[in-house]
Image (cartoon, rainbow, N blue to C red; front, side):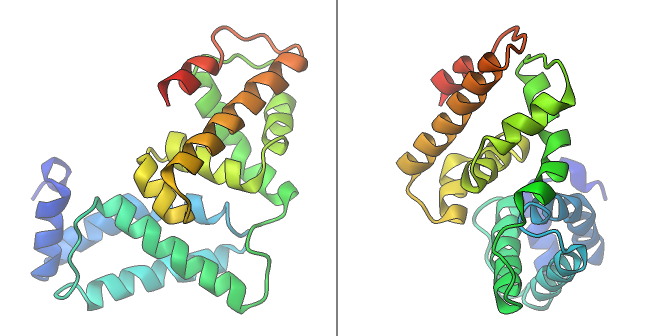
Length: 199
């Protein structure tokens, strides 16, 4: 069965009825997404993998009782975020990884985002500097919106803030990035203000 052409509702219906192939498809589709998001919360890869494992175990165990009214991706990210942060807090680590650890993880994703928006950078050092210029909350919001493509309402729920506050957070992040790159004499073909206007 080709699950790539099925809706999330149809796939979840198959899983709730015990379809192992549908469950494997969801795992293979979203486990990498969860890992990529998790590395922005903690640098402990084993902890991230444990959290992904636990989320999918609970999903399968409770499949007959769970009702998913949102997208599968959002449901999994929400469950994973809650589980991972709880694990991090339980072992008395910081809620977020240190800035230097996060830099390494963010450079590739931000380079993709910048290129998609036709921002041409002189070097990867400018990417790193731009990333360092954002707060942890700004990075998380921009990542979820522009890298993972979640809706504003979903991100606001994940981050436990109001939608209007999220708009302001992302708008400020993009303004900070564009201003920082301009100040660094970065050549910009078409910079972020068009994204801001689209918010």
